[in-house]
Each structure stands twice: as C-alpha cells, then as structure tokens.
Length: 481
Image (cartoon, rainbow, N blue to C red; front, side):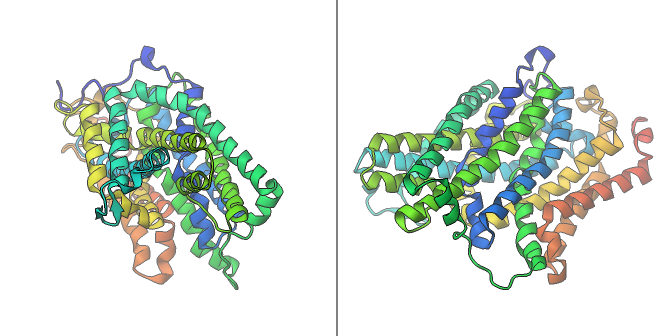
C-alpha cells in the first residue's frame, strides 16, 4: 500500500455517494444544536450586547463562513477526496500534514470540551434518577470537580468511541435520526418558556434587561470592542468545518445536495437555537429571579423543585444527544482522517479517532472551557491563515481544477520537489503573523480581534503573489517542478 493512501483516504466512488440534501441539513442541525450554541448569546449579552445584536452577529458570522464551506465542499463533492488529500494541492504531499494537524489539534480541543459538557449532562441524568449519585466518591475532587462529573465524562467519552469504531455510515445514521428529535425538543423548550413566563411578549421584554449596560459607549467603540471580536469568534466557531468540510461532502450525491443542505441547515438552525437560549433564559429571570443560561443547570433546577423526574430525564437525554451529534461530526471525523494521513499504511479512521479521543482527555477540557472567547479568536487566526491559502490555491491559482491521481502519486506536481510548497508555508506564517501583530500595539488590536479576517486576507494575498511571481501560476507547476 502507498504511503499516500488507504481505503479511508481514497476517493469515494460515485455509487457510494449516498448523502442527499436532507442528510446535510441533518448534519448541520446535529452540529448546531448543542449547549455552546444555546449559550452563545449569553456571553455576548454579558459583554454588553443586546439580544438582537447578538443574534445579528450569529447570523452574519454564519453567512460569512458559509462561503468557504461551500467552496471547499465543492471540491469534496467533485473529486470525492477528504480534507488531508485536498490540502496536498496547496501545501504539498508532505506539507499537507501541517494544515491537517492544525485543524486536528483544534478538533481535539473541541472534542474534549463537548465531551465534558456531555459528561455533565450524563451526570445530571443519573443524579435525577439516583439520589446517591451526587455522593459518589465521597469528598474526592480533582481540579475542582468530583467523581460524579468525571464518571459522567468517561461514560460519554466511551459512547463517542462507539461511533468512531462504527464508522462514517453510523455518523450519517446518528445525524439523520437526531435532527428531528433535536428540533422538536428545542421548540418544546421554547413553548414551555412562553407558557410558564406569560407569553413571548413578556419574555422578549425581559430579554432587553439581560444586557450588561455600557454607558457612554460610542458606535465606533462598540464596533471595535464588541462587534468585530464577536463576529470573529462566531466565524471561528465554524472555521474548523470550513476547512475539513470535504470530509463530508465527498459523500454527496450532487453539488446541489451539499450546497443547499449546508445553507439551510446552518443559516436557520444556529440563529434559531441561539434565540431559544435567549428566550428560555429570559423566562428563568421571570420564574426564578435569576438568569440560568446553562440548560443542564435549568433541568436540574426544574427536577429539584418538584418537576417530573422522567421529564427531567428526557430533557437531559436531549442534551446528551445534541452534544453527541455535534461532537462526532464536528470533532472526530477531521482528526481521524488527519492522523490516518500521517501514516496511511498503519493508521486508519478508527485508530485516528481513538488518538483524537485520547488527546481530548489530556487537554483538560474543563479548563479550556473557561477561555471561551480567547480560544475561539486565537484558533480562528491560525485556521484563517490556512483557509486563505487553500481557498486562493483552489479558486484563483487552479481555477477549481485538480489532478486527483497526482494527489496520490509520489513525485507528482503536488510534491513541489521536496514534498512542501514553500509558498504555502510562507503565506501561512504571514497570515498568522498579521493576526497576532494585533497583540503588539493597541492601535493594531483590530488585527487580532478580527483574526480570521486579517489572517485569511493576508495569507491569501501573499500566497497569490508568491505563486504568481515564482511559478507563473500553473504553467511551471504542470511541468513537474
């Protein structure tokens, strides 16, 4: 077997491309309906935005990131190749490991975060059914958390491993079944909030009081200190998927299926579920006199105050399913393929997924969760630089044309002589450098606050200039340089 391929990295034949429009809608419903999405408006509102401004940022950020999702997804559907192979065109047969592993490290971090959140839901579910659960392990604790939390974390981690072992078709099955259930549960939560708190009008009126007042803030200050950083964070929320979306669209039956499915699934679900988070939290202010943003805490509160144990268990189960469907699709497939790409002869999808799952534990996700906005902005700069190179190469340098056989062939045009495309490496460093230049001087802070935008633009421009100036675009490349 070649060092460049195995059965998991090879192009998907036409008769195995079974994902239709609904599967892509389901994919994005499954990934978008999760606790971080539910709580997304919370951190924006607490920073000084109104709920309307937060939803505008969420919608706009998703509309922006949809463009690279569709362009990179187009390559996956057209050629049937996964992201690590797609990256070979711009970075080189060996250099592709760099963007692939950068994406994987971020995915491992998110895998850990989502698994920790899912574990808390498991712990809450078991606690609602067994009164002795909370005393498990006595007074033992590690880094501020006790045995119930870590046990729930381990149980949810093992559930994730089942789907890693079962493979891609099990993921399609999970997302397809989870989507209608999650939509129904989200709407049911909204209707409960409206009924319990006196109607949607009362809820929206209370929503206006959730914002943390920032008296005297000018429009310019609002844009620079709130709007741009949070728009960047919102784009960064899916900057990961905008790179490795070929891992999914390679299974699409047509370009229409993947493009329409992604647009509908992403642009509808994210704002809707974030709005549900705002509305339900506003209802908790009316009902309990305090804002309860975390749905796990809300369900625990409802159960503790005389609510139905089985209703609480159903709500916790919905949280578990939501977190699982997000985690498997968004944070397992990419690192599994990327680690397999390191050594295709020895590592397959299963082994790559297990490696990612282990890193997700070692990264201490309960600590990473405390650095939410900084984490989103920082890695959006890293991945923005990679995205700038890949988009520029595919759209402007290669004009949407790839030689699939050459992507799997030693010494082909994509080897760039040494396995690395130096232009891609220089451009990536330039993009990252421009973004982090914003940390050097307050007057340049906008470069870091808008890290995805500045890194993408800088990397793309530098890459285009280097490829145009040193290789005459595709002419010399096709001569086997």
